[in-house]
Length: 377
Image 1 (cartoon, one colour):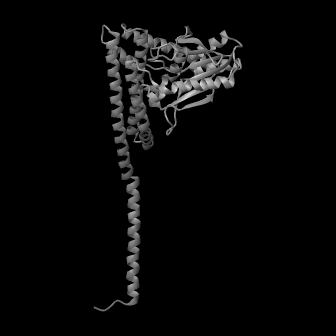
Image 2 (image 1 turned 30 degrees about the vertical axis):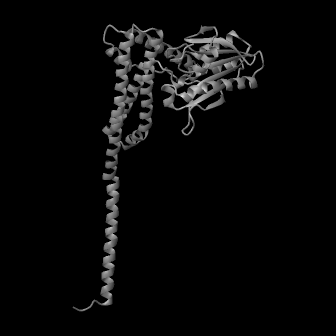
Image 3 (image 1 turned 30 degrees about the horizontal axis):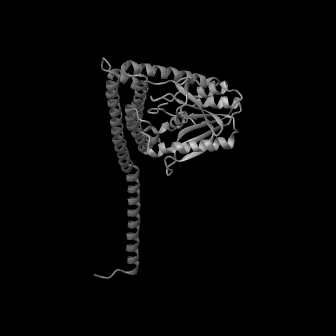
């Protein structure tokens, strides 16, 4: 066989080089097609599997809370008939927000709706648990609300899961899969809250009422406004009016109305308001740490905070806040030792604050904000 000439060698090398380029190009096109076609479908299936697994866990949480509610109602309320159907009705209750196109008067409308909802909810719970006393009715109301929250979370997640699956929308599925760990964490906290409410145990959110209760110890108490009690004491030669929700049932009261009433009873005498509440900590912070701030430290939809801010503005009264840092889970589950021990430190902070910001003989309002379950007067 004759050897190839130099020219033939060049032609063969060029042909092989072109084939290599073509093969690489085809491989790249095939890889991209697989990545954006089959690869995306595979990723979608993985996301759907993760969400389905989380949804089953949420379903287990809501069923556990519902079973606990049913058991507790039967043990405490001694109903004559099966309370199951009535509890199912409570699980589906909802609140329609008022029209806000014209914002004037919106706070009053929301406050009215919340009052109606709160009254109806208590009456419904009292009806299915006729053997429960007033404190137990409040605890059962909190228990039913925790079960309602878990049921609502499950229904919302199931809705978006089925919607994303039905429309094959990867944008819905990706967002749901990304948020699911946080949602499950919150649901676990609600399940822990349900157990605390069933047993009447103090929860982390009760640190404000706990501090107020210590200030009220051995003092004469009186009831003001809705489910709020007050008592007077002396601290560093100042007259201190402490207030909290009426316990030991699960209750938050209406501290905004109570503070407004006390200010109006002592026109020109109140020099400052100090509010004590739990606050959500940042990741990495230690539970039970204390911080001071300015403004009304109170959660909820905002109606009570509006009343406090409005009254303080009218009378030119400064509002200070002392908060105890907690996680969301710690706030609605049984109170931890480090949070309970923070109570005495909060009282020392209050003393320092009134020494710095008031004069002897002044009247100070100290409001313990939060759920007072398991915390007496």
